[in-house]
Image 1 (cartoon, rainbow over the protein chains, first blue to last red):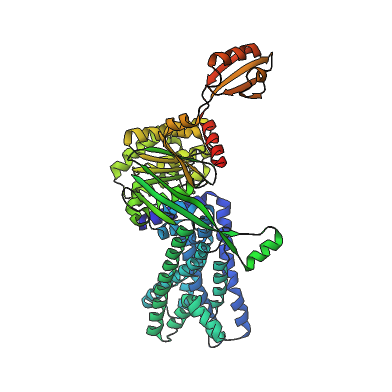
Image 2: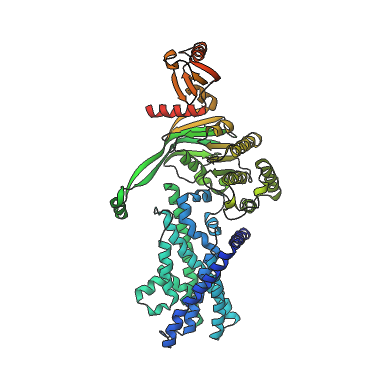
Length: 259
Length: 326
């Protein structure tokens, strides 16, 4: 199963590479977007030394974790974004008529080029920042790996739940809900402590982007390490199970409604 | 093999009012009505049968197929395939059937055909030798060799359909569902596909349930038919009987310059002219063949003449006319 999954992805990369110009454009523009989005805190911090006790490099570290999680989702799980279109044009019938888990089929579908840039920029800056903050060690690398896995699962779950709304609403092949969720999540690029309580709650437990990127940096800073790590794990598992449940419910709804 | 009892499927549809105001209203309050796609039908099909499902657009054909695959839950009634309920039999059942929707591709659109085939091998957990043997047979019969290395999205419609039909036989399904498999294809491809399906049905005993608007498909592939009209079953039997039941008329097609008005000679016949060709349709009880021939020879300078039974197209349009009258 994993083998076939990777093979699909390999094929998609090969397909994208056939269009050489487009491939490089997407790659370069992806890198530029990510690097430029780091410019905002760069400018802010050239005027103020710290925000709510957070240093500049820690903000960049938060961004790195977010980039990596989003990049992974885009590279590996881009198919999630095709769900509304698949429902709309009936492609979902083909998915349901194969003896393979529909979730697996959806995840294996497609691949986002921008994700490669996002993943690349995120990984490089993660290592640079760990070194600059003087915490680069086998232990922090292993910890980061754990954060990245949890973050990717969380990110995927949010996308999946958002896109599954298309099962219930006649969306004409598009749905805005996952975009809204993803762009609200972008506020978690900054430490959530700077926001009012309600926003913090939303970013932690409704659209839990804080756990993708802010909480990992808090753990690396040494705040409540065990508690936060356990919470991250718990939230990731919970959201994944929730997303799967929503997806399965969606399919059941699709089966009883027909389109 | 297939057993359908009192099957009913009702959809809930969103009613949108026309115009801009209607669209705005729909944003705040949606209205729903019920639409019956299948209104209580029963039929059976035995192992290895090639069964056609005939019906006008919206007659419930696709819904029937989706219910039989297990994609849709029936509103009422019972469905069993191979003695199991398709909704509950799950993946082991899906492994025994194959599905081709004419308007959608089962191939992974961006990757070469052969990679899609190999994906099927893995996904269906096919033994390598079985896969290789089936692959060779399919590639041979459907002339797929030159297509295997192209991505599906670069294929023409005909090539893609051949590749799609080939793919569904890789896992040797016992029962195949085809929804409009030859829609939009040229005559050569249609012929290849029909011959292939017929061969698989006869040699491997693959059961077939086919819906098509192309009645030649049905004629060449299937022996039996069910006819649906507005969600009701209006015929269930062999194709030959279907023709005989509804076709009681004969048709003479004659090409040539008219000398006399044929309508005056055969007032009871239906006459239609198209360019230099005239079709005369009549009831055998009304006129004898001799009378008709006599009338035609005196009415035309005959260049060409054929006498035939109306084809299945004719049959079907007749059935639907009757369905509407009833």
